[in-house]
Image (cartoon, rainbow, N blue to C red; front, side, top):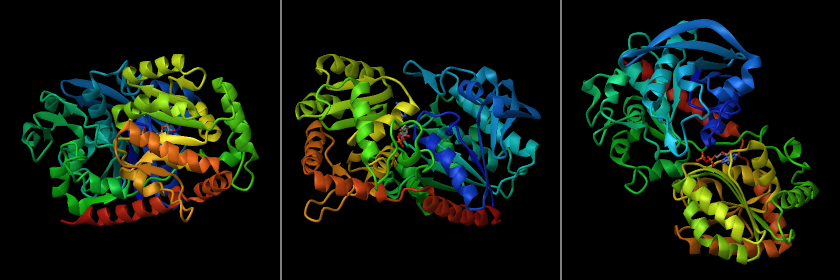
Length: 480
Ligand code: ADP
């Protein structure tokens, strides 16, 4: 089976969030199961700066028309299974999608170009996949092109559209229709029109062979008005082709027993290293009363993540006797509120306003509790990473958090985290207090940590489910 994963980011090359973790790890997991899976992403500045030594120009270069302009796409290979699409005018920039709270104004050009370049790569580089696996709005036009402009080139190629986050639509003004080259016959409610705009995500939903999202619970939630972001109607129409497959995490990258980023390694059998990590984190953060439990949050700073719930309750939570560290980049309004909190928290709160992989590892290893008060959460990797590091997640009862966190049951002692339902600061604080109660009883806490660390979040099970989904849509793709 040949699978081409087309995505706008993939770990370790370029990452802003969980999408990158998923595309990077899924490619490896599929290959581990015998599939010929390959990955294609843009050649961003960060890719050039960090990976150019191991990157080889394939010699293939094509002209890609986008709207009334033509761009050059140069294809670079990294090992046998990864391709980068170079177009410096569009991708040689400091960030992936935008700067200073604003998207790049030409994102419609950038990802139309990328989607067309992916199809040009297939034609040029002699790797015709059975399935093109598309991820989020940035690659939403690919299924449209496979059904229209490229239908004759790829009659047997199926497309799977994976929705990692329905909140990001890739919406552009109607004039973007001429940039995509899709033709006005597709600009209607059954095509890529979304309330008067052009939606790249909708193109993926409407024209793909099948759709999936990243947890079973989120696959159910997105059919409702509350979580459907306006797409619930169109998703209901495609119900027969909609699946939910929960993500895994990469056990090589996230492994407390052999993690080069943390001060001391540890495992469920010997937790002394975690105590070292906690001490080191308390020193790094300059915490007063370093014996206090450490509560952490590692997150994009966006409305989705329930940052407002934390900000409204943080002073009280700190007053309940914890030290708190937040590592996050994103919305400036949240960043400045956290900066302010740091100045008033008397050494019990530290904010790190950046995206920093190594620091994320140190925080997961060194803290006791990690927060995910998300308003919605398609899957969430953070809670799984935390459990792997023996850090107990406190999360909202939504999306993939429901599928992956077993809420603690005091009578039986079962559970690997704590869930709360109401999206209110009070409910978040109450849930943290529940966790702190168990923390105080060290025996029960140790059992809980051990249960959390034993949970299986490897990619293998999910990758097997992807393979059977690919097989089913390959059959469909070949139907007359
Ligand atoms: P999302 O994809 O919505 O951002 P997930 O929980 O699925 O959320 O995945 C987030 C990933 O990004 C995790 O690997 C997490 O550790 C990482 N991450 C988020 N914010 C930061 C940050 N500021 N620095 C380093 N890693 C981060």
